[in-house]
Image (cartoon, rainbow, N blue to C red):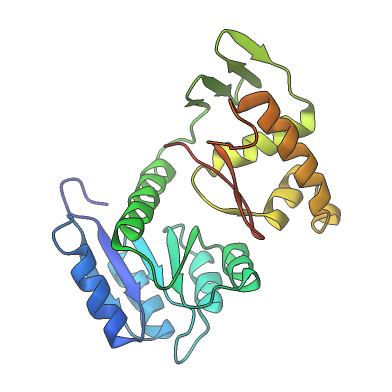
Length: 232
C-alpha cells in the first residue's frame, strides 16, 4: 500500500445488487474500490492493480471462488475475505484451506464487513514487515523468540505441543485457522484429521491463558471450522 494512499479493495462479485451494496458500504470510509464480475478478470485485476484486500464471492460464473483463491495464492499474499451466500461449514473450510484469510456469510452488516477489512489491512501491513516475535494479549505476553509466555508477573509453563499450537495462532493472529491447518502445523500431516487433539489442547491453553476459559476472549472458536486468535 502506497504511503498516504487510500487502501485499494478488489471486489470479485457477479451480482449487481451486491456490488451496489458494497460500493455504498465502503464509500466515505477511506477505501477505494475496483470491481470484477468474473474469476478470470478478478485474477487479472489482482495482478495489475496490486490491491490491498480482495473481497471474493464463491459463486462466480466462470470459476469457483475456491479455485480463484488457490490461483491467487500461487503468487500473492494479499488478504482474501470471502463473502458468500454459502454458509455450510464445508464451504468455509474449503475456502480457508485454499488460502482465504476470512469468511463472511451473506447477508452481513456493513459494520462487520468494515471491521474484517480493517483486520485484513493490518495483516497486510504486518506481512510487509518482519513477523512479530512478541505479542501482548491483555495481561498475557507471548515471546516466540524466547519461547516464554507470561500471565501478569507469572511465567506460564506450556508443553512443547501447546507452545507450537499457540505460536501458529500468534503468527496468523486474527485469521481463521482451520482444524486441518492447525493439526498439520502442530502435529504434522498424518494428524490432519485428528480434531480431538485440538479440542484437548485448546482447552488446556484456555485454562492457562484466559481469565474465563469458558468464555474465551482471545482463543476463540469458529464453530465447525477451526480457531482464531483475537488480538483486539
